[in-house]
Image (tube, rainbow, N blue to C red; front, side, top):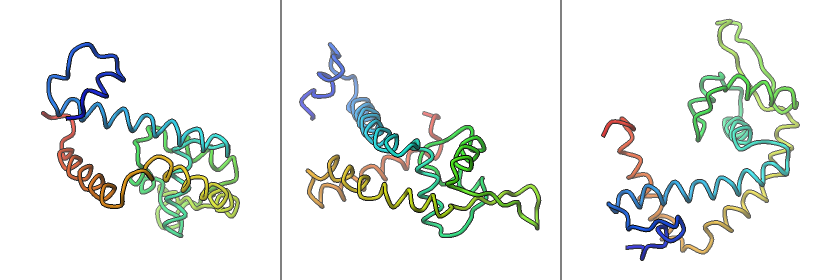
Length: 161
């Protein structure tokens, strides 16, 4: 058991009813804290975590992708993917190109300015990852990855008990 650290952090008077409850809340608390750190980092470069995620996806793919494909690959669900792409386009970080085969499909590609921005962010992002998890051993990180992957397997139907 964790010795009640999360219980103390949340100023919860009674112990958690289930260890699964404590684990779920611990994941949510950790994700929130990590998310705040990354949001602050990206804000220094004038973008949001969702905008960074889109740029990262496009750089990794190496070619333009349909908007819906980008939406499927995002770490977190973004309800307004079109607006997100609009903002990135206005910033000159991505460019759109309508498909000639199917006019309903819009491809989005990263621009040289988008690539340049990611190159500026890369060392800072790597340093933040190390700051947040560098105190864990390689084996512990691999175990954490495995446990989180196993936990996500229950998400085939996420809200159905």
